[in-house]
Length: 62
Figure 1: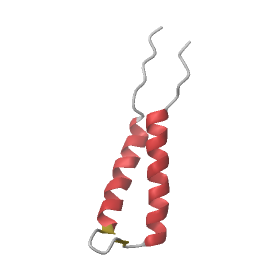
Figure 2: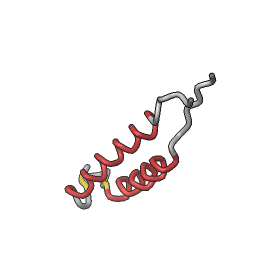
Figure 3: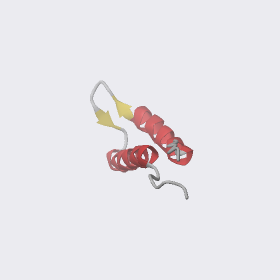
């Protein structure tokens, strides 16, 4: 059987939204964040959504 691996669009949408939010909240001149505690939480969820988007479900279909 052909093993097709696709992108999970739900996690892609979450990663895109959080990536934009982190970009808007970061100040590159002073390397600070607008709201550090919330932005660290955003970063954790961003990394997890990238992981789940790329890893996906590796079980072959029956």
